[in-house]
Image (tube, rainbow, N blue to C red; front, side, top):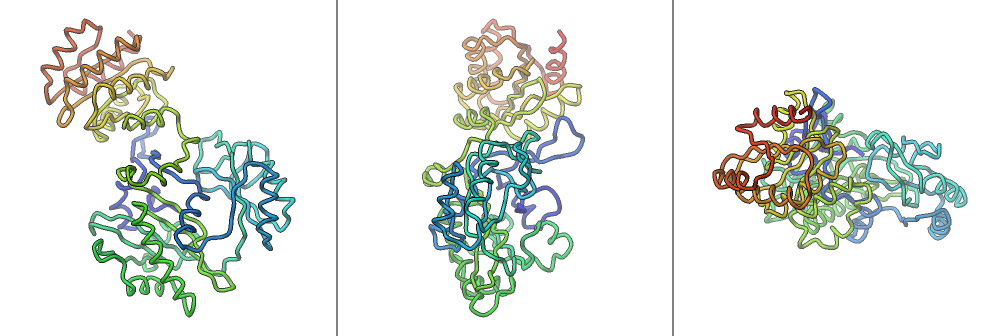
Length: 435
């Protein structure tokens, strides 16, 4: 399904809220153009999103999840539908056009035969599925969703997301669903409709009806669509979502309005009150280093270079990677320590990057504002002692308590390479690779 935050031509509302979604905009060290590197905070598998909607009154297909062929066949017989849809469950789009290492083409299949469900499952579970959104080697499929297949008479698009310019949620709809919404916004913007919701008053009947009419629902379907839009907004608030996207939000020939596919993004700061939702987080497809970093509130993304970067602030981290590249080096990671980092966080950051066999040098680039440079300095010396760091470490510190921090580093007696500024730090990090 098309995600509102995907790179490309976006509706203006989407560009403004891009910073609230689970993606960072980074410059790839291997490319001259800006690319999008996805960052996982919380992602739900399709079946989890569907269950969340079904449990809150939204119309979805009947479905269950299987981990092997026998379970899949049993589910198909239990559903007793005229036709079934079998979907591989991975955290990536484009599954229908994907390829399995088993040789099976397509991660989405329709069939009327329960026994065929079993044969298809055997070629899905335990094999990697490669799509346009997965790494080249694909992603291991561990589960499949068996669902009742509905004919779709018409497809529309519906999303709710936070927009800073409106200081609250906005509902976006289009009668042109089932396709990339970016293309609709670019080529036929008149088909994009939006309604800002007053966060204190909530969604009004007139607003839900306006959107349902713009989505071209008529007669009894119109009333269903109005109710579904209101229920979706209630769910959006209930789970502290930053974005809910339904594509397609469609109608069936027998008169049902159904949420056929969904994508949820959640406010990571609401973890403390959304324990049940965050407990569904599927981390099996994540880089283990990202999972480990998340335990200590560190923002980590692995890259392909050999100079590890430990920085505070996403902007400074991106600038650090760029200046390393400018001096002929290649960053091994994006690692933002965050404003509230303590000594243990710095230690854990070192622990993560030193486990990467490609790392030949470490660059620590800190501008202390909220961050106390002396805390970072203590974390560096602790990591150096406890981890037996055996690669060059270049340190550039500036800002809050920097003099105290420099004294800590000097008195440690450790062979740290001190830099005066960012340019000096990047240059020394690159030179340290050949010394």
